[in-house]
Length: 416
Image 1: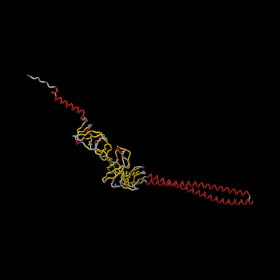
Image 2: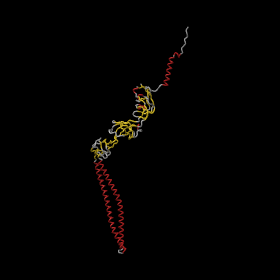
Image 3: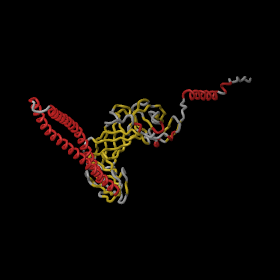
Image 4: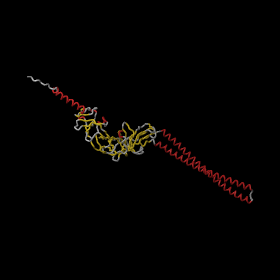
C-alpha cells in the first residue's frame, strides 16, 4: 500500500532564506543605529605629521628679527643757503664736534651782512653820540648851578649888609628893598634849577640805561649776523660717523635742506617689527635675548611706536650691558622677546594645520593609530614652537599637525 506523504511547512522549505534575511535585517539595524556615518577620507600615513600633546612649561615669548641701529642720529640741515664750493669729508668718515664737512658760498649773504653791519655800527655810534650829548648837557647845567650859587652868595652878603645899614638908617628903604628882592629872586631861581637838575638826572639815568641796553642788543645782533657767515661752513654737530652726505660740488642748496646725518656710535639699539597680534601685550621693559655670531646679548624694550603698518608695529630695544664692541650698523639679530613668565600647560607643537582651522579644531588619532577624528579644541597663547591648549585635549594624545587641505570637509581620516 502507498503511504500518504506529509507536506513540509513552508518555513522549512525557505529556512535558509529566512535566516539570511534575518541576518541582513539585523545588520541593517545595527548599521543604522550604531555605525559611524561621518564622512571619511583615506590618506597615506607617511603624508601626515603626527605630534604628541605634552604637559610641560610654556615659555611665553615670540621670535622677531631686529636690525642694529645707532642709539641716536643727528640730521644735518643747511642753516644758510648757498653754492657748494667744496666737500671736505666723505660719507662714512669719523667726525668730531666742529669738524668742517663742506664749504658753501653766498655773495648775496655777504653783501646783506656787510650792509647790516654798517647799519648796526651807525646806530651804535648815534646812540653813543646821544649819550655823550646828554652828559655834556648835564655838565653845563651843573656849571650853571655852581655859577648861580656864587652869585647868590654875593647877593646874600649884600642883602645882609643892606638890612643892617637900613636898620641903622644909613641907607634908604628903596635900596634895601631892591637888594632883598634881588636876593630872594636868585634864591628861588637856584631852587628851581636844582629841582630841574634832579629831575633831569633821573630821566637822564633812565635814558642812558635804555641806550646802553639798545647798544648791547645791537652788538649782540651784530655777532649773530657775523655768525651767518660762519654758517656757510657746514660742521659736525656731534662726535660720531658721517653716515650720509647728499652733496655735490657746484650744487645750490636752500635754507633748511637736509644734506646728511651723523650717527652717534657710543651706544647701539635694535629696531624690530612685531606682529600687531601682540601689540596689547608689548610694553616697555620687556626682556629680550638677542642672538649674534659672537654670542647672546640681553636687551629690553625701550620704545614702542604706536603706528601699525602692514599688520606690524615697531619697537626699539636697548642693550643691558656693554659687551657689544663688535656690532655694526645694519647687522641683523634673531631676538627672543619674552612676553610673560613660564607656566605649566598642555603643549601642542606648532604646525600648518593652524592655517586651516584657526586653532578651533584638530584631528586626533585613536589608540591604534589607524584613524584620526575631528575634535573641537581651544587654543590660548603661542610661541614659535608650541600652542597652549586650554581645552579639548589631554596629555599623551596624538594630533595631526600637518596641513589639512588634503582632508577636504571630511570628519574622519583613515590612515593606510
